Image (cartoon, one colour):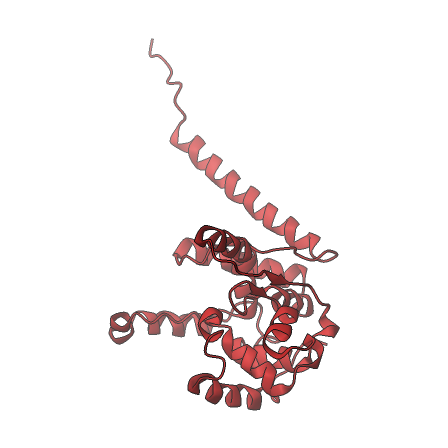
Length: 238
């Protein structure tokens, strides 16, 4: 008589993997559902930054306070949408055209040689990554980002997504959210940011820790004018 093996079969392992993936997605969905009535106290990116600062031994003050959507300058909302995701109100959380263009750009010989990386992510995708994922790039992480982005769109809606994004995005070392950024750079509440101040903050978003020390450099000065002009044309959630 053949002795039955006690080791798990390939099928059992496969089902365990599928179950683990589904449980993880359920966890993400429940966390997002909770944010319809509560506010995120931190994000995965914030916790990673806190750990990095702690390991470095640097004395970096942590600045992050929540402000409601209506207490954020409309100009900042417009500038961020103009800079980061011009189709924010009309896309479903993912801009497949932008992703395709970014993929082509990132795999061109010239840009591979220069080590340039284009993201192609919407505001919703950026929020999905900031809330739950790591900065490391991989196809698995990108796929999870897309799934979470659709969850955010389906559960929260555009206004809440933009509110959480503006309250959690990085604007410098230890500087997170519109309130901290407005007070740190312009010494005033987020509600009183002018269109040029808002545009300057929006331009910082792709590399906030670099632009923190080059806030009035030639590139950011020129780009601020472009974003300030575009901000008049975009639509934002009311």
